Length: 217
Ligand code: ADP
Ligand code: MG
Image (cartoon, rainbow, N blue to C red; front, side, top):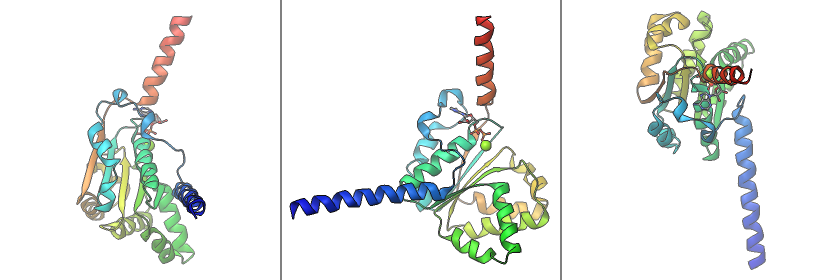
């Protein structure tokens, strides 16, 4: 019996491990990034304390959102992925979308008359990442479907949104001022805002590399 108990405990742990693996797989991360590879010194504009607080995951229980705003290459997607990965580890149901990828899927599902089924699936999530809002403008239908998605998530599913655009310019990609206002309203009702305003990490890295090569030659 002692032996049997130990065995089932091991089975339980194994099952938990498998469930976690499944949650990570289902989240659909394009690349996995974690916080331990994020160099806060390289991006001093990022509020480290806030990031570490968010890693605890309570924002999801309170259905709060996280917005990461800043120019390209400042680690927004990295941080969004690290937060979402941590959420998977904490037992949450997560989906990572590039915003344009999500809009494309919404348009396709609508075409196939599968939209409400897709929304039902999304409704089961604790956290949804909308990465890189702002690089590509949406069609009118695309913007409306995205707005619907954000509305449905409101106070039910936490959203992490990354964008290179300040709010003032969101209407340019959404097309409509009124819809953009309503979208920002829902997104920011309960929100943590992280700003990354430094130099691009990639650019800084390649500059360093160039300098090293210069010294060598
Ligand atoms: P953004 O989404 O803001 O455009 P990314 O998160 O895609 O930027 O970052 C670009 C690349 O640089 C990624 O490979 C990312 O892991 C890396 N990176 C960015 N900032 C940092 C940082 N502070 N520490 C470590 N790696 C970083
Ligand atoms: Mg990005």
